[in-house]
Every structure is written in C-alpha cells, then in structure tokens.
Amino acid sequence: MPANPFNGQTSLGIGIGLRIPHYQHILTKKPVVDWFEIISENFMCDGGRPLHILDLILEQYQVVQHGVSMYFGSADPLDREHLKKLKRLVKRTRTPWLSDHLCWGSVDGSYTHDLLPMPYTFAAAKNTARKIREARDFLEVPIAVENVSSYAEFHASEMTEWEFLSEVVEWADCGILLDVNNIYVSSINHNFKPNDYVDHVPHHRVAQIHIAGHTKYRKYILDTHDHPVIDPVWELYARAVGFCGNTATLLEWDAHIPSFEEVHHEALKANRFIEKLEKEALPA
Image 1: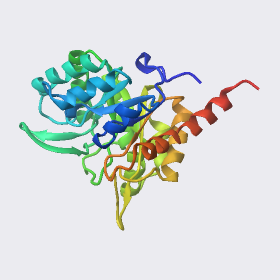
Image 2: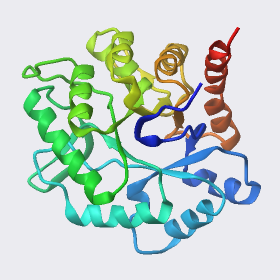
Image 3: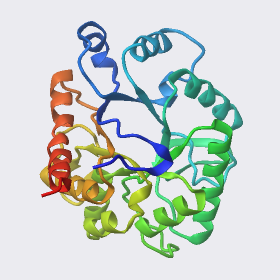
C-alpha cells in the first residue's frame, strides 16, 4: 500500500510526541522510533536547554513540527514575528510538513491559549484558507490542519464540521492532520456519527493521523491525552487508514505520562491495522 500522496509526503510510520519526562531515556537508550513530533512553540527560542536537547534528538531522529497557536480561524492577521521564529525552527528541524489546528484563539492581539471551535460558515472557511496559504507561502513548507475536539457549537454554522474542514483544505490546497480521537470526542459531545466524518473528508489530503486517549465524564468527553486509546477510537483509525492508506501516525500522551516503553508500545498498536491493510492489498 503506497504512502498517502498529498504534498509528495512519504509514510514515516508510527511516531510519538517528544516529552520532557522521556528525554533521558531517549538520549541514553536511543530506542528505535520512526519519528518524534514536537510542539513548535516549546522550541521557538534563541538558545538554552530546549534547543540543545532538540539538536541532540535531530542527530538521531526525524522530527515533525506541530503547532498550537497559529489560530488560522481568528479574524486577526497572522503574527509576523511568530512566523519568523517558526521559520527559523522549520529550517533547523527540516520538518517535512508543519501542522496546526483548525480553530481560533485570539482577538485584537489577545491570546486565549486555547483551541476554540469555529463557526462552520463559508465566510470563515474562506478567511481561514487565505491565512493558511499565506503561512505556507512564508514558511515554505507544506501545512496540514488538524480538526479539534469541541464542546460548544455555533447556531450560525452553515454546514457540518467535516464539510467545513473539506472546504478549508480545498480552498487552501493544504493537507489534513486527521485526529480520530477528536472526531470521536466531538461525536459524543455533539451527537453525530463519527463514521460520517471519516467517510466524507478528502482522503487524499490526509497527511498525518493523530490517535490519543480521553476522559469520559457523565455528560461529556474531554480530550485529555492521558489514557490509552479506547477500542472505538482504534476502530475509527482502522477506518481512516482504510480510506487514506499507510499514513504517518502519531500517538499523543500529554498528561499523567507513563514510561517511554508504555507510550511507545501503545503507539505501535497502530501497526496491526497498517499490516492488515497491506496484506489485503496484496494480489491473490
């Protein structure tokens, strides 16, 4: 099964997030890991320990950047100073693509530091797509946008979330970071069928997939990244790779972080779905 062709990206395999509690283990044991995802904002500095650690990691591993503060959906213009720092980091890491979230989070220069859901309107889609194109042209690297988990909806919305995502990426001509855990979380919170989401996004644009755990409360589910992946999310993942092919996959585990071995073992469970897909693709 060939890698997803969008933006000429190759299949990197299964990665995990680079997190501080695992630094010592990674640098001393040098475990075999396909790639690490870093949070861009944690390394957008001029020096110090973060960049020293990053350079040591880059000597051994492929790194892919993932951002949390571009806020493509905000009405504010893109922050040019942020873009300049981000571009320096892109050159340092040689990331094959850059991802951030399909959300908003700033108003008149004030930042919420949260990933707020969008109103699913054509006007918002066009504005968001314009900013993605602007960022891609400045950074000179492919961009993939991630669907967020959400806990509120806008009455002004003119379409479903997956229709909105599709409109944005087609107008922006960019990739998708398909987070299947976020799809599951939002499907429970907003009462839609998660399969409908996975089935109707433009699969050829899915450059990366996120899997993660979450926390279930009495009335809603919260995207906490502090548990193993549950079976319904694995089933969504299997459905996604069935449509998208062998796609770079990343396990997120950001709170109550267990040992490196446990996180890596959980991530590698994705391989069983990839292997099944490849076996089914073999000629009889």
